[in-house]
Each structure stands twice: as C-alpha cells, then as structure tokens.
Amino acid sequence: MTSPDTTPPTEETSPGAVTTFDAFARFAATAPPTPPQPGQTPRSLEQRLAYHSQFVTVRTPAIENLSRSVRTLMILGRHQSVTARPSLIVTGPATTGKTTALLQVGRTCHLAHTRRAAPGDDSVPVAYVLVPPGATAKTLAGEFARYLGIPITSRMTTAQITGAVCHTYTAARIKLVLIDEIHRLNPRTSTGAEAADWLKDLTERVPATFVYAGIDVTASAVFSGVRGAQLAGRASLIDCGALPARAGEREPFRELITALEAALDLTSHRPGSLPRLAPYLHERTAGRIGSLARLIRQAAIEAILDGQERITKTLLDTIALDHLAEEHYRPRTPKRRTRPADR
Image (cartoon, rainbow, N blue to C red; front, side, top):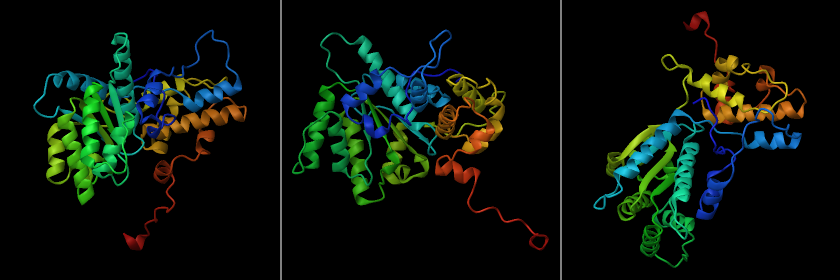
C-alpha cells in the first residue's frame, strides 16, 4: 500500500460524471497525474496547483481485495447460465474509499479489455450505474438505459425498458456491472421493493458479474427481509472501513501517509514530516481515506499559494475538513466535565 496508483481519485472524478459509456471510457483512458520524477523539469506554479487538485490515488487493501475478488468471480461465473452469478458488495462508512475502489476495478477491467480487443470489436466490458435517490423500478431501469444511450420515452412501461436494457446489455457483451449508492435502495417501501425485485431480475437476465457499493450496507434496509436475504445469500462482502493506526506489526495509516507524502510536489517539504504526524492525522480524519487525501491535497495547495512550500501541523490545523471529520475532531458541543457531585 506504499506506492501511488495510476488512477485519478474519486474526489475529482465524481461518480455522476462517469454514468454513460462514453464518459466512463474517457475516464478510463485519461492519462493519470504522475508524481514529480528525478531530473524532471520543475513544473510551473499553475501546473503544481493543478497536479495537487487531481493528485494520485494509493492502492489500499480494499482496492487490492476487490480487484482479486472481481477477477476470480468473473472467471467463476463465466459459464454459469442458469442462475445469477456470484456478486460482491463493497460497504463501509462515508469517505472510506468505496467509490475509488469501484472505479479502479472498472477502469482496470476496461483497459484490459481494450488491450485484448480485436480491430472492430465494439463490445462494452463495464457498466457503471448510480442508484437514484428514492429509486423505483422504472427510474433504476432508466439509469441502466442511459449508460448505453438506449432511447426511452416517458410512455414506455418498466417492462419495455427492461426488455431493451437486457437485450442491449447482452448484445454489448457487458461482463462487469458496477452499481454505486446501493444504500439508496429501500426494500421496506413498496416502490423500493419493486426496485429491488427489478434488480434481482436483471442479475438473472444479464450474463455479467454485479458489484454493489454503498454506505454501511449491512446495517441498511438493503439487507433486511426476504429480499435482503436473497442479496446477502449471493454476495460476498468487502469492508472499506476506516484504516486502523495499527494492525499487528503494521501501521496501515502511517503507510498511507508515507505514500501520499512521496507524491507531493513542494519545493521545501521535508520527507518524513507527515508520517511523524500520523497520530494527529488519524485523529483529524478518523482514519478515513477520503478525508486524509483531501486534507493533504488542500494543505499542499495552501502551501504553494502562501509561498512556504511545505506542510506543517500548524498549516494542517487551519484547514476545515468535511463536516464528518470536523465533528469527530472538533465537536461543536464540548464534553461536559464531571464534577465531584456527579460521580
């Protein structure tokens, strides 16, 4: 987990920006940002600001685990035709790298297919779909249709859209379907139940491996009741939890900080200064990958703009992070001190 990956981070590749095939293909083919190399001509101020705005993504254990599992399940289900193929669910709290992992696996699959494809091969290896808020069977079917540009009208029934989706996805030979924000699906409502049933029907009619991602899926309504049991019975779980400060003999969070620091393009930053702040950074971000990446990127931009060209604890403490991280580190309601009479 100590080397930068070649994937742009999800903070800059928003999930909603890649929910059509053309957009996803552009995302997959776009050359990723690269750290400064020895002997390289120094970048201009504007180039360095743009670089830290994009920055690199570090391969985390969750990305490694998901990549291996998807590869295995795609092979396992390759010749399965009677029932739905085994699937995966990526779960965890917000800002812990779920969408990053999902997009990384999709990008890898897309590029591997592109390298192997014969001239004239117009098949589509990957689909990436966001579950819309308050999803119904029809709106969810519409999102699947939109990804491949399948023409639909408001007068079409859900069954008609479903038929068009299943036919087109099968004809396009899609092998991997990535479904993000699955926690938005609520089978406890009548419309949510219909959407869950529709999705189950789709997995049985489209010969692909399905991977779902969402916030704390196991504690959500998605896993509740009979429909939830059907999903849980087919899917393996990959947990994208916050990184611990220590795991056995290793220090995963410090390793992540070291990898991010190595990718900085600052003229006066002292290598090793950020890993020494690992306890502070873990407390600031609660071990969440997204919060840490944002903090370091934002601090790097501030360091360039104010001319100090290095990241210090003083600078880090002036930066306001996402509300979730700030509430963890600087809660608005301070804890009440215990008085002797309260004991």
